[in-house]
Image (cartoon, rainbow, N blue to C red; front, side):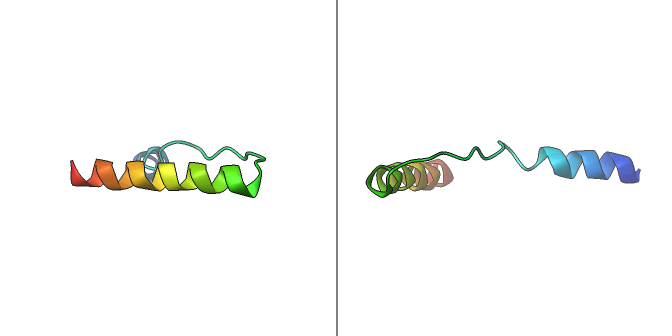
Length: 44
């Protein structure tokens, strides 16, 4: 039972984050786009 719960919660994490090296200007644009996409998905 415990192992089943652990595996279930591990899968809830979603995608793994990947480290990227960007200039601040480019990173801000990317961050704004990602956050806007999250807001759109929540409203749907």
